[in-house]
Length: 451
Image (cartoon, rainbow, N blue to C red; front, top):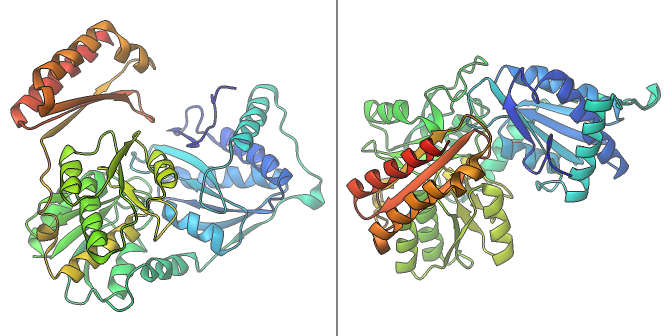
């Protein structure tokens, strides 16, 4: 069974076009509800980010779940990692997140997970896919008897509970008093949460991009657009800046000089701190995109490092396989399984702040032990969904081979297709910035011609 409609990472797309529309959302709610009900599920928690389509999709999914006899508990705009936590806290049987993460407002997505914060098992996913396909193509959607319809309730104190959870991951013997922090919530799901967490721990907080209107989520702000945060840090003479993305599972920093601290550097900071404190278990998991500078810095500290495929779920799988606890991506997905079961931007940021306080150094100083190698990433847009064919083409492979031969041990090349967009990502990394840019552009040009 091919995952045409729904799979491990849920479904994501442009709202108003298949598959993200009210009819699809209702049918997915019914299909998922039917499968979950057969396993004993009685209630699901539904959360969303701040994009305008979330209201429509939330209502449609409620109808589908209700038709399958599943109760729904609504928590409103809430970070993706908060849904994982709240699903367990409120003893719900499953969680639903309506979010397109760092994507623009006109996209949206739906993701389901168990009450342990993990993906549904393969058998459940296949059965949901089967029922969804029947509902879409054959009108097979049914409804339980009226007396068995699911009910809907709203949880009013969800935000407060999650704030307390985040604070609980920070050393209770420490405080953020004396730190001036600029917080950029990307006009997203953490707009009413992130600033409260840092302030309640004692920091002086300047909050920006915390006024969502349904359309401005991730718009020139947040973890994917750091210009406004850099400016604010310098204007307010802050100690550092913290940027989350639309659903707050990513985090990026800006130091007091306005320099960006990305996910690779965050992982280095945490690995270094955990190593010093004796809390590091095993090594660190990065991805194929992790900067070579991270690998070199970890090696100098005798910390093992392995690379997983790109995507936080692959990092989680590798962490579980190795029994390690720390990993992540340069994009800001940071996983510290000691503190949470999933990538959580706020929780990860608190661990960085803990490392700063413990060391008595600035953010710039604690990350100075790692030097990033020049890395260029070029996204090549495609006209059709044929990324695999293009990457495997003779012309593209020849350009990759030529670049690898030219750079030798001084660099590396990675080509991969995007999981959410019609893109091929061309990444080149080497010891020389000019060489890196030249080789990346040459390969990108070959990809364009092949497309």
